[in-house]
Image 1 (cartoon, protein in one colour):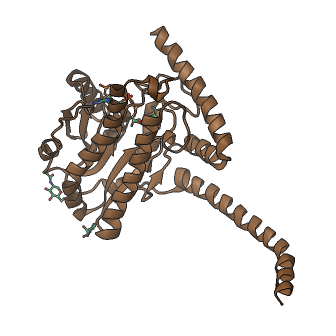
Image 2 (cartoon, rainbow, N blue to C red; image 1 turned 90 degrees about the vertical axis):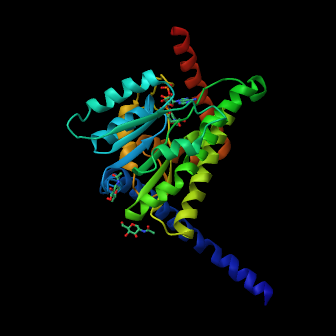
Length: 324
Ligand SMILES: NC(=O)c1ccc[n+]([C@@H]2O[C@H](COP(=O)([O-])OP(=O)(O)OC[C@H]3O[C@@H](n4cnc5c(N)ncnc54)[C@H](OP(=O)(O)O)[C@@H]3O)[C@@H](O)[C@H]2O)c1
Ligand SMILES: *[C@@H]1O[C@H](CO)[C@@H](O)[C@H](O)[C@H]1NC(C)=O
Ligand SMILES: *[C@@H]1O[C@H](CO)[C@@H](O)[C@H](O)[C@H]1NC(C)=O
Protein backbone atom coordinates (compact mmCIF):
# COMPACT_ATOMS: atom_id res chain seq x y z
CA UNK A 1 0.00 0.00 0.00
CA UNK A 2 2.72 2.42 1.09
CA UNK A 3 4.82 1.47 -1.91
CA UNK A 4 1.88 1.90 -4.24
CA UNK A 5 1.24 5.44 -3.04
CA UNK A 6 4.96 6.27 -3.41
CA UNK A 7 4.82 5.16 -7.06
CA UNK A 8 1.67 7.19 -7.52
CA UNK A 9 3.43 10.28 -6.13
CA UNK A 10 6.36 9.82 -8.49
CA UNK A 11 4.02 9.46 -11.44
CA UNK A 12 2.30 12.67 -10.47
CA UNK A 13 5.56 14.52 -10.01
CA UNK A 14 6.14 15.56 -13.63
CA UNK A 15 2.64 17.04 -13.82
CA UNK A 16 3.54 19.46 -11.06
CA UNK A 17 6.38 21.01 -13.09
CA UNK A 18 4.30 22.67 -15.80
CA UNK A 19 2.05 23.96 -13.04
CA UNK A 20 5.02 25.42 -11.13
CA UNK A 21 6.28 26.90 -14.39
CA UNK A 22 2.91 28.49 -14.99
CA UNK A 23 2.77 29.94 -11.47
CA UNK A 24 6.30 31.32 -11.81
CA UNK A 25 5.42 32.88 -15.17
CA UNK A 26 2.28 34.44 -13.71
CA UNK A 27 4.38 35.81 -10.85
CA UNK A 28 6.79 37.50 -13.27
CA UNK A 29 3.99 38.76 -15.54
CA UNK A 30 2.31 40.21 -12.45
CA UNK A 31 5.59 41.96 -11.55
CA UNK A 32 5.86 43.51 -15.00
CA UNK A 33 2.22 44.63 -15.06
CA UNK A 34 2.57 46.09 -11.58
CA UNK A 35 5.71 47.95 -12.67
CA UNK A 36 3.86 49.51 -15.61
CA UNK A 37 0.87 50.34 -13.43
CA UNK A 38 2.96 51.91 -10.67
CA UNK A 39 5.27 54.04 -12.82
CA UNK A 40 3.10 54.95 -15.82
CA UNK A 41 -0.64 54.33 -15.39
CA UNK A 42 -1.63 54.95 -11.79
CA UNK A 43 -3.67 58.10 -11.04
CA UNK A 44 -1.78 60.85 -9.18
CA UNK A 45 -1.43 59.98 -5.50
CA UNK A 46 0.50 62.89 -3.93
CA UNK A 47 -2.68 65.00 -4.21
CA UNK A 48 -4.18 62.86 -1.41
CA UNK A 49 -1.74 64.58 0.97
CA UNK A 50 -2.74 68.08 -0.11
CA UNK A 51 -5.77 68.52 2.12
CA UNK A 52 -7.06 70.80 4.86
CA UNK A 53 -6.14 74.42 5.40
CA UNK A 54 -2.48 75.19 4.66
CA UNK A 55 -0.94 71.71 4.34
CA UNK A 56 2.81 71.53 5.03
CA UNK A 57 5.51 69.15 3.87
CA UNK A 58 8.52 68.85 6.17
CA UNK A 59 11.82 67.79 4.58
CA UNK A 60 15.05 67.16 6.47
CA UNK A 61 18.40 67.72 4.74
CA UNK A 62 16.73 70.12 2.32
CA UNK A 63 19.65 72.39 1.40
CA UNK A 64 21.14 70.13 -1.24
CA UNK A 65 20.60 67.06 -3.43
CA UNK A 66 17.38 65.09 -3.29
CA UNK A 67 15.97 67.10 -0.34
CA UNK A 68 16.34 70.46 -2.08
CA UNK A 69 15.01 69.11 -5.37
CA UNK A 70 12.02 67.55 -3.60
CA UNK A 71 11.36 70.85 -1.80
CA UNK A 72 11.17 72.69 -5.14
CA UNK A 73 8.93 70.02 -6.64
CA UNK A 74 6.52 70.04 -3.67
CA UNK A 75 6.44 73.83 -3.51
CA UNK A 76 5.59 73.98 -7.22
CA UNK A 77 2.76 71.54 -6.54
CA UNK A 78 1.22 73.66 -3.76
CA UNK A 79 2.70 72.42 -0.48
CA UNK A 80 3.82 74.87 2.19
CA UNK A 81 7.21 73.84 3.46
CA UNK A 82 9.22 73.29 6.61
CA UNK A 83 12.84 72.75 5.62
CA UNK A 84 15.78 71.56 7.64
CA UNK A 85 19.48 72.18 7.11
CA UNK A 86 22.68 72.71 9.04
CA UNK A 87 23.90 76.00 7.56
CA UNK A 88 21.85 79.18 7.89
CA UNK A 89 23.60 80.71 4.91
CA UNK A 90 22.91 77.74 2.62
CA UNK A 91 19.33 77.60 3.89
CA UNK A 92 18.67 81.24 2.96
CA UNK A 93 19.89 80.51 -0.58
CA UNK A 94 17.72 77.39 -0.71
CA UNK A 95 14.61 79.25 0.44
CA UNK A 96 15.15 81.85 -2.32
CA UNK A 97 15.62 79.12 -4.90
CA UNK A 98 12.49 77.31 -3.73
CA UNK A 99 10.35 80.43 -3.67
CA UNK A 100 11.39 81.21 -7.24
CA UNK A 101 9.65 78.08 -8.59
CA UNK A 102 6.21 79.29 -7.46
CA UNK A 103 6.31 83.03 -6.75
CA UNK A 104 2.57 83.60 -7.04
CA UNK A 105 1.31 80.62 -5.01
CA UNK A 106 1.09 82.50 -1.70
CA UNK A 107 2.81 79.57 0.02
CA UNK A 108 4.84 79.66 3.20
CA UNK A 109 8.40 78.37 3.73
CA UNK A 110 9.68 77.87 7.28
CA UNK A 111 12.94 76.26 8.35
CA UNK A 112 15.05 75.06 11.25
CA UNK A 113 18.80 74.58 11.55
CA UNK A 114 20.31 71.62 13.40
CA UNK A 115 23.46 69.57 12.98
CA UNK A 116 21.90 66.13 13.12
CA UNK A 117 25.15 64.37 14.03
CA UNK A 118 24.99 65.92 17.53
CA UNK A 119 23.86 63.93 20.54
CA UNK A 120 22.30 66.81 22.50
CA UNK A 121 19.42 67.67 20.17
CA UNK A 122 16.20 68.72 21.89
CA UNK A 123 13.74 66.87 19.63
CA UNK A 124 10.71 67.94 21.64
CA UNK A 125 11.63 71.62 21.25
CA UNK A 126 12.00 71.26 17.45
CA UNK A 127 8.62 69.54 17.07
CA UNK A 128 6.98 71.98 19.51
CA UNK A 129 7.95 74.90 17.26
CA UNK A 130 5.69 73.51 14.51
CA UNK A 131 3.03 71.94 16.68
CA UNK A 132 0.08 73.92 15.33
CA UNK A 133 0.77 73.41 11.64
CA UNK A 134 -1.02 70.93 9.38
CA UNK A 135 1.94 68.79 8.39
CA UNK A 136 0.62 66.10 6.04
CA UNK A 137 3.94 64.90 4.59
CA UNK A 138 7.11 64.27 6.56
CA UNK A 139 10.19 63.36 4.53
CA UNK A 140 13.08 61.90 6.51
CA UNK A 141 15.67 62.65 3.87
CA UNK A 142 18.77 63.76 5.73
CA UNK A 143 21.46 61.18 5.35
CA UNK A 144 25.14 60.84 4.90
CA UNK A 145 26.68 58.27 2.64
CA UNK A 146 30.43 58.96 2.77
CA UNK A 147 31.48 56.46 0.10
CA UNK A 148 34.73 55.05 1.32
CA UNK A 149 37.06 52.25 0.42
CA UNK A 150 38.10 51.35 3.92
CA UNK A 151 37.20 48.38 6.08
CA UNK A 152 35.51 49.32 9.38
CA UNK A 153 38.65 48.58 11.41
CA UNK A 154 40.50 51.16 9.30
CA UNK A 155 37.80 53.84 9.72
CA UNK A 156 37.80 55.74 12.98
CA UNK A 157 35.09 55.41 15.58
CA UNK A 158 33.84 59.01 15.27
CA UNK A 159 33.37 58.61 11.54
CA UNK A 160 31.20 55.53 12.01
CA UNK A 161 29.27 56.98 14.98
CA UNK A 162 28.47 60.07 12.93
CA UNK A 163 26.99 57.99 10.10
CA UNK A 164 24.84 56.02 12.54
CA UNK A 165 23.66 59.22 14.28
CA UNK A 166 22.76 61.04 11.06
CA UNK A 167 21.08 58.13 9.30
CA UNK A 168 19.43 56.33 12.18
CA UNK A 169 19.31 58.15 15.48
CA UNK A 170 18.11 61.48 14.13
CA UNK A 171 15.31 60.17 11.83
CA UNK A 172 14.11 57.87 14.60
CA UNK A 173 13.86 60.52 17.33
CA UNK A 174 12.62 63.38 15.14
CA UNK A 175 9.81 61.15 13.86
CA UNK A 176 9.01 60.12 17.42
CA UNK A 177 8.79 63.77 18.51
CA UNK A 178 6.43 64.73 15.68
CA UNK A 179 4.30 61.60 15.94
CA UNK A 180 1.52 63.00 18.19
CA UNK A 181 1.04 66.00 15.87
CA UNK A 182 1.09 63.87 12.74
CA UNK A 183 -1.45 61.50 14.22
CA UNK A 184 -3.67 64.43 15.16
CA UNK A 185 -3.38 65.88 11.63
CA UNK A 186 -4.34 62.49 10.21
CA UNK A 187 -7.80 62.80 11.75
CA UNK A 188 -8.76 65.06 8.86
CA UNK A 189 -7.13 63.00 6.07
CA UNK A 190 -4.09 60.93 5.10
CA UNK A 191 -0.67 61.85 6.49
CA UNK A 192 2.51 60.18 5.27
CA UNK A 193 6.00 59.77 6.70
CA UNK A 194 8.62 58.86 4.09
CA UNK A 195 12.03 57.44 4.95
CA UNK A 196 14.53 58.01 2.16
CA UNK A 197 16.34 54.71 2.02
CA UNK A 198 18.89 53.14 -0.24
CA UNK A 199 19.22 50.03 -2.35
CA UNK A 200 22.43 49.62 -0.33
CA UNK A 201 20.14 48.58 2.55
CA UNK A 202 19.16 45.48 0.55
CA UNK A 203 22.21 44.50 -1.47
CA UNK A 204 25.87 44.08 -0.58
CA UNK A 205 27.73 47.30 -1.33
CA UNK A 206 31.31 46.87 -0.11
CA UNK A 207 32.78 49.00 2.72
CA UNK A 208 29.59 50.88 3.61
CA UNK A 209 28.24 48.61 6.34
CA UNK A 210 27.42 51.48 8.79
CA UNK A 211 25.48 53.30 6.07
CA UNK A 212 23.77 50.25 4.60
CA UNK A 213 22.99 48.88 8.05
CA UNK A 214 21.40 52.16 9.08
CA UNK A 215 19.16 52.10 5.99
CA UNK A 216 18.14 48.49 6.63
CA UNK A 217 17.26 49.45 10.20
CA UNK A 218 15.17 52.36 8.95
CA UNK A 219 13.33 50.08 6.55
CA UNK A 220 12.28 47.80 9.38
CA UNK A 221 11.41 50.72 11.67
CA UNK A 222 9.23 52.22 8.93
CA UNK A 223 7.38 48.96 8.44
CA UNK A 224 6.70 48.49 12.14
CA UNK A 225 5.61 52.09 12.74
CA UNK A 226 3.19 51.61 9.88
CA UNK A 227 1.77 48.50 11.52
CA UNK A 228 1.59 50.32 14.88
CA UNK A 229 -0.63 52.99 13.32
CA UNK A 230 -2.63 51.09 10.77
CA UNK A 231 -3.10 47.70 12.34
CA UNK A 232 -3.39 48.64 15.99
CA UNK A 233 -5.11 52.01 15.88
CA UNK A 234 -6.42 52.35 12.30
CA UNK A 235 -5.21 55.95 12.03
CA UNK A 236 -4.71 57.66 8.65
CA UNK A 237 -0.97 57.92 9.29
CA UNK A 238 1.23 55.78 7.05
CA UNK A 239 4.95 55.11 6.73
CA UNK A 240 6.83 54.47 3.51
CA UNK A 241 10.40 53.45 2.80
CA UNK A 242 11.62 54.87 -0.52
CA UNK A 243 14.38 52.75 -2.01
CA UNK A 244 16.85 55.01 -3.83
CA UNK A 245 19.55 54.01 -6.33
CA UNK A 246 22.38 56.25 -7.52
CA UNK A 247 21.38 59.93 -7.92
CA UNK A 248 23.64 62.86 -8.79
CA UNK A 249 23.55 65.17 -5.77
CA UNK A 250 25.64 67.59 -3.70
CA UNK A 251 27.57 64.83 -1.98
CA UNK A 252 27.58 62.36 -4.87
CA UNK A 253 28.99 64.16 -7.88
CA UNK A 254 28.82 61.31 -10.36
CA UNK A 255 27.98 61.87 -14.02
CA UNK A 256 24.32 61.57 -14.94
CA UNK A 257 22.99 58.68 -17.01
CA UNK A 258 19.76 56.77 -17.40
CA UNK A 259 20.45 54.91 -14.16
CA UNK A 260 21.98 57.94 -12.39
CA UNK A 261 19.54 60.83 -12.75
CA UNK A 262 20.16 64.36 -11.54
CA UNK A 263 18.37 65.04 -8.24
CA UNK A 264 15.87 67.40 -9.96
CA UNK A 265 14.78 64.59 -12.33
CA UNK A 266 14.80 62.17 -9.44
CA UNK A 267 12.57 64.39 -7.28
CA UNK A 268 9.80 64.31 -9.88
CA UNK A 269 9.62 60.52 -9.59
CA UNK A 270 9.95 60.67 -5.82
CA UNK A 271 7.04 63.08 -5.43
CA UNK A 272 4.93 60.95 -7.81
CA UNK A 273 5.46 58.04 -5.42
CA UNK A 274 4.03 59.91 -2.41
CA UNK A 275 0.58 58.84 -1.23
CA UNK A 276 0.71 55.59 -3.23
CA UNK A 277 -0.47 53.48 -0.30
CA UNK A 278 2.54 51.13 -0.58
CA UNK A 279 4.92 50.27 2.25
CA UNK A 280 8.08 50.23 0.14
CA UNK A 281 8.52 52.05 -3.16
CA UNK A 282 11.31 52.31 -5.72
CA UNK A 283 10.40 55.73 -7.13
CA UNK A 284 12.65 55.72 -10.21
CA UNK A 285 11.74 53.20 -12.94
CA UNK A 286 15.35 52.51 -13.97
CA UNK A 287 16.38 51.91 -10.36
CA UNK A 288 13.38 49.60 -10.09
CA UNK A 289 14.51 47.50 -13.07
CA UNK A 290 18.09 47.29 -11.76
CA UNK A 291 16.79 46.34 -8.31
CA UNK A 292 14.64 43.56 -9.78
CA UNK A 293 17.60 42.20 -11.74
CA UNK A 294 20.15 42.20 -8.93
CA UNK A 295 17.81 40.91 -6.24
CA UNK A 296 16.52 38.22 -8.60
CA UNK A 297 20.00 36.75 -9.01
CA UNK A 298 21.65 34.15 -6.82
CA UNK A 299 23.13 36.10 -3.90
CA UNK A 300 26.78 35.27 -4.65
CA UNK A 301 26.46 36.55 -8.21
CA UNK A 302 24.62 39.66 -6.96
CA UNK A 303 27.42 40.35 -4.43
CA UNK A 304 30.02 39.99 -7.16
CA UNK A 305 28.30 42.31 -9.64
CA UNK A 306 27.33 44.97 -7.09
CA UNK A 307 30.86 44.98 -5.65
CA UNK A 308 32.40 45.49 -9.08
CA UNK A 309 29.90 48.29 -9.84
CA UNK A 310 30.48 49.96 -6.48
CA UNK A 311 34.25 49.79 -6.83
CA UNK A 312 34.11 51.62 -10.15
CA UNK A 313 31.68 54.17 -8.67
CA UNK A 314 34.01 54.78 -5.69
CA UNK A 315 36.93 55.19 -8.11
CA UNK A 316 34.94 57.79 -10.06
CA UNK A 317 34.24 59.66 -6.80
CA UNK A 318 37.91 59.52 -5.75
CA UNK A 319 39.02 60.91 -9.12
CA UNK A 320 36.41 63.64 -8.88
CA UNK A 321 37.72 64.58 -5.40
CA UNK A 322 41.28 64.82 -6.75
CA UNK A 323 40.09 67.16 -9.51
CA UNK A 324 38.56 69.27 -6.70
N1 LIG B 1 22.65 60.38 -3.86
C1 LIG B 1 22.46 59.08 -3.94
O1 LIG B 1 22.91 58.43 -4.89
C2 LIG B 1 21.67 58.36 -2.90
C3 LIG B 1 21.47 56.99 -3.06
C4 LIG B 1 20.72 56.30 -2.13
C5 LIG B 1 20.18 56.99 -1.06
N2 LIG B 1 20.39 58.32 -0.91
C6 LIG B 1 19.81 58.99 0.26
O2 LIG B 1 19.15 60.17 -0.11
C7 LIG B 1 19.20 61.11 0.96
C8 LIG B 1 19.72 62.44 0.45
O3 LIG B 1 21.01 62.25 -0.11
P1 LIG B 1 21.68 63.29 -1.11
O4 LIG B 1 22.63 62.52 -1.93
O5 LIG B 1 20.65 64.12 -1.73
O6 LIG B 1 22.56 64.14 -0.05
P2 LIG B 1 23.25 65.59 -0.21
O7 LIG B 1 23.18 66.12 -1.57
O8 LIG B 1 24.59 65.42 0.43
O9 LIG B 1 22.35 66.48 0.75
C9 LIG B 1 22.26 66.11 2.09
C10 LIG B 1 21.46 67.12 2.86
O10 LIG B 1 21.54 66.76 4.24
C11 LIG B 1 22.22 67.80 4.95
N3 LIG B 1 23.11 67.23 5.96
C12 LIG B 1 24.11 66.34 5.78
N4 LIG B 1 24.71 66.08 6.96
C13 LIG B 1 24.08 66.83 7.88
C14 LIG B 1 24.24 67.03 9.27
N5 LIG B 1 25.20 66.38 9.96
N6 LIG B 1 23.40 67.87 9.91
C15 LIG B 1 22.44 68.53 9.25
N7 LIG B 1 22.25 68.40 7.92
C16 LIG B 1 23.06 67.56 7.25
C17 LIG B 1 22.99 68.54 3.90
O11 LIG B 1 23.31 69.83 4.38
P3 LIG B 1 24.43 70.72 3.57
O12 LIG B 1 23.71 71.25 2.36
O13 LIG B 1 24.79 71.77 4.55
O14 LIG B 1 25.54 69.80 3.21
C18 LIG B 1 21.99 68.52 2.76
O15 LIG B 1 20.95 69.43 3.00
C19 LIG B 1 20.09 60.46 2.03
O16 LIG B 1 19.29 59.85 3.01
C20 LIG B 1 20.86 59.43 1.26
O17 LIG B 1 21.27 58.36 2.08
C21 LIG B 1 21.14 59.02 -1.80
C1 LIG C 1 -5.46 72.91 9.83
O1 LIG C 1 -6.53 72.34 9.09
C2 LIG C 1 -7.80 72.44 9.73
C3 LIG C 1 -8.81 71.67 8.88
O2 LIG C 1 -8.78 72.11 7.56
C4 LIG C 1 -8.15 73.92 9.91
O3 LIG C 1 -9.36 74.03 10.61
C5 LIG C 1 -7.04 74.63 10.70
O4 LIG C 1 -7.29 76.02 10.75
C6 LIG C 1 -5.69 74.39 10.04
N1 LIG C 1 -4.62 74.93 10.86
C7 LIG C 1 -3.73 75.82 10.41
C8 LIG C 1 -2.72 76.32 11.40
O5 LIG C 1 -3.70 76.20 9.23
C1 LIG D 1 -9.29 59.41 8.51
O1 LIG D 1 -9.58 60.48 7.64
C2 LIG D 1 -10.96 60.64 7.34
C3 LIG D 1 -11.08 61.77 6.32
O2 LIG D 1 -10.36 61.45 5.16
C4 LIG D 1 -11.72 60.91 8.60
O3 LIG D 1 -13.11 61.01 8.33
C5 LIG D 1 -11.49 59.80 9.60
O4 LIG D 1 -12.13 60.09 10.83
C6 LIG D 1 -10.00 59.63 9.85
N1 LIG D 1 -9.76 58.51 10.75
C7 LIG D 1 -9.09 58.62 11.89
C8 LIG D 1 -8.96 57.38 12.71
O5 LIG D 1 -8.56 59.65 12.26
